[in-house]
View 1 (cartoon, rainbow, N blue to C red):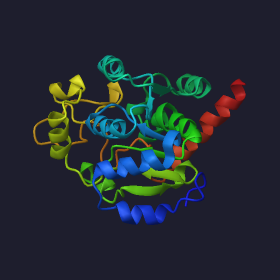
View 2: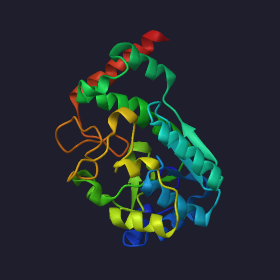
View 3: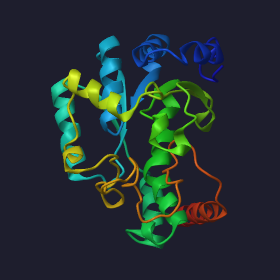
Length: 260
């Protein structure tokens, strides 16, 4: 059970919905949580599918997105186009100004390619903390994770308790979908498509940290491509322990306190 919804047996719902179609998972969340449910999306293909499924149940479903301050202009243009086409009432969350100021003051504008710990710190300030702040008023949220995106995501459940955000419910309705299924749904339902896909991108994030795929590369190879190893995640969906990241975050906190 979640801290926010003590009357709801999340474990029972998770077991029941584990093999259910994505539309049923989304419909359950919209009806169970109402305005305490939100679709969290960066407006990639998976997020557009989930948003379409949710809007079929409730056209006024809450939609949260994170503006990191480093998104491509194409993403801003696309979000505006979706907002105008669908009438989405979008809740945009941004990095904390004090944390951003402290990070830039100590590490400069582009620390992410110098050190994995600093890249994770940048992601934490620009994405992880804003999401945590936005989810304080939410009992359940949906993401576009798929199990076949990477080995790290292979165990993704369709419904789970999100312990990183106070025990609320996290839904991954497309967990058992393939990339081809996402695009088949997109085409068959005429969903808007982010323009960077046509330029060879398969996963779209911040402008300096995302590039098109090269022939034969796996789906997420264009994210933080200069890093070695397969654990290239931003921290939105869990992160690996790192003493160097912890030290960088502690230093950032000290810098913030000193600036107050």
